[in-house]
Image (cartoon, rainbow, N blue to C red; front, side):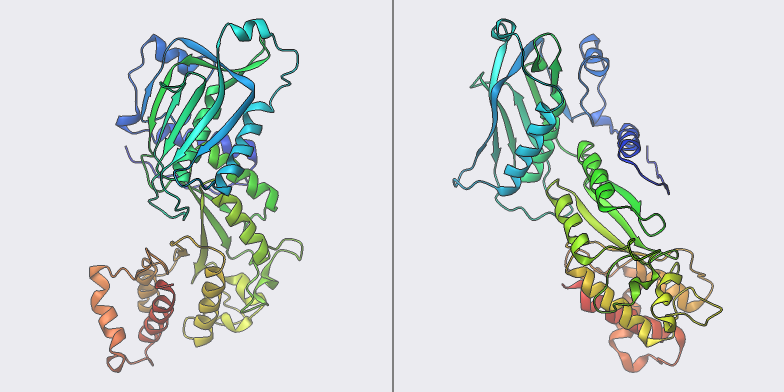
Length: 410
């Protein structure tokens, strides 16, 4: 069953997590749905819950405790350790062990259970480029069938390993009797992969400015639910809060001076997300929803009484768009960018063409994807002598195509 969800909301960390959990529940696929027996019901309603539910799960009836000297170990075929994985180890160690004090635990009760001393993480590929379609599958065994004192996590990429670390952390729970971290229902054999390549969440900081710490908490919540694209709606009618060095007066359209993001802020968010296996897709809403642009550059408005959409008859408009895209390219390395395109009057020829051009995006797998119904238009653009640029729709098409050709191959 397909479901589309559109939301505009002010996000807090707790509300994001609840919403993400609900999205995952309605997005389950047939191969992720389990016919529950009594043992499976214990998993759902008992001490631990795996979320989203993995593609394949086998479990037992045993119990394993994590040693107080428990550690994560990366086993690399070439002997090189990944700094990104080290960062993830530190993060998940805190998630697992920082919920309660472990002092005063019963060593007698601990001796009566299987004790895990480490989680061994095997990653096949050293390629850590994060893009849509990266392999995020993993295999998790608790304990390892060949070493009962260790758990085993195998993945083709670091991003599969991150998803496996999240699942492992969900298996771990504090036992208030033994004062230890335990894994119930061992042994676990989990094979998992995402159902969807694109699993996204949108935040709108143009209408509702959010401090960096709030955006980071949203990203943390996305990682808990194994989402992988943060759709960052940065610019809209209400505000233009981000720095654009090529046109430095654009962020005069921010709500206030403190409610702005520097390019370094944006880079920090992109890196914070990348370390959690999450792409950041920027949205630059054009040509509508752009009143805030004119606070810095009034020439972008058709007139003082008509402040949106952007003046598409003005070549300066496309110079600004091109400058924004160039500056964004230095920050947002994801190969998709969202260009808005909504609320355009398609009965007007130039607006209709711009709406059609929007579907290209500026980056798509490092090449310009020509959809069949527009291929004849592109031919016309390439043969510029056949276009009368004095006509608004031809002028618009020529300039938009120039922007796309410039940036689609970056």
